[in-house]
Amino acid sequence: MSSFGPNHHAHSLFINMDSGATSRDSFNVSSTTDNGTGDRTVTATNAMGNTSYAIFGIGITSTVTSGSTCHVTAMEQDKTTTVQRFVVVDDRSTSSPPGRENSAACYEYIGDVA
Image (cartoon, rainbow, N blue to C red):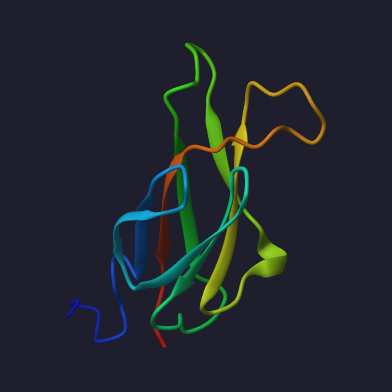
């Protein structure tokens, strides 16, 4: 238990998943869904207290060349207290909208659990 009380946690949810959206390690994750290239949905086992929780994500790829990166975008319109959809974007992409990267990724929610 945190020194802030029973509902405050440093990491309310985290997941490290491979490029196929399969979990390699996780906490408070009941399932993941591969929605297509670079598009994943993570479902929490225990709901967050509200939809104001903070989200951090990073894409990890071996195909990115020097000087280029990929980043994770959370789809706010799909955010609930148990479900969050993420897209991993390839920063090398010249298309509009930018191309999606089918890379490994890590996501973290920080906030109060209900």
